[in-house]
Image (cartoon, rainbow, N blue to C red; front, side, top):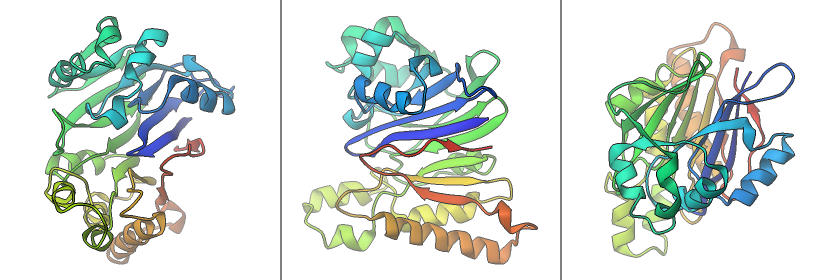
Length: 279
């Protein structure tokens, strides 16, 4: 059984858990994606699910912005779990004053143009580069005990490579950061608005919706909308846009069984989600 949980999803912090569970409810080879929440908070939320830190044995990092790596140093110091990232991204992390004292012993390098078996026999990962104004930003295609999962957060614009991985996944976590009208007419300074919208910042609701129409396929079961803006979006607007795109696709490509329609969820910004079962 493959299960997924968001601990936090937004500029306040980003952290996600993906694991393969045995029939008795145990999980020993899960992965955590990004460490933007405190170790104490992560432990508390795992305990709520009757899990401990033994439920995961690898950490993936998408990029070096603080809302994604704020607690990485603390996690490395106390948990000593392998931290997987590309060579370029590790080069940035070792210059982060909150990370570098503790990461060396945990450092594991991902090959950029190939699959990487990060938990032997259970989890393989392939990073793909996405446009964002960090040192380097990676989306991840993950195969966990045969289940295909894709996460692409902080993506300024969709790329053909990102779409190709999403098109083969059972679950896709994709950014739906802002509503264009809210951003344009909001209180952000002009340069910040430009940074968000210039193709190297964040993905808007309409851009996310267009991507859904392109990567939707009959095997897709879950779409999680992540990294919603606090000031320039609402869960209702993000869901309306994504569900509208899905409806358009379904009109042109009816599924043989309505129960196969993907479930679209807007992940909460500051609070944890439930523990979702994916397969």
